[in-house]
Image (cartoon, rainbow, N blue to C red; front, side, top):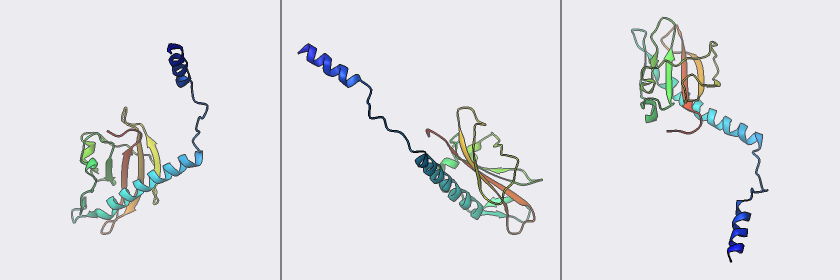
Length: 148
């Protein structure tokens, strides 16, 4: 009986020969879906932004996702323009979100490792807001990998 149990245990411990591989197109589809979600949040941020009489940008409506309020959540946004202080999410706390050097009228997506142990997926777009002659850069992030 002991030999039978040992044999069954040995068989159960053997690596499976049925190893599944991930289709590269499935990974591309997941990244595309992830970026589409980022785009939707970015568009909501842009739609909520206005420029006041003083030339400062503000939000008519706060972002609906509470993770943009939680420090170090990986969910961050920032709106910037030349000669203006950055307007940013509370979740950034006292940190500065760096962006790539180029400006784009279309959303651009990329990964960032600027915060240690916190890989981010970033989308950014440059927009000309109503009542403003300046271009505003909108940046929004989500964490990559496990979420807290």
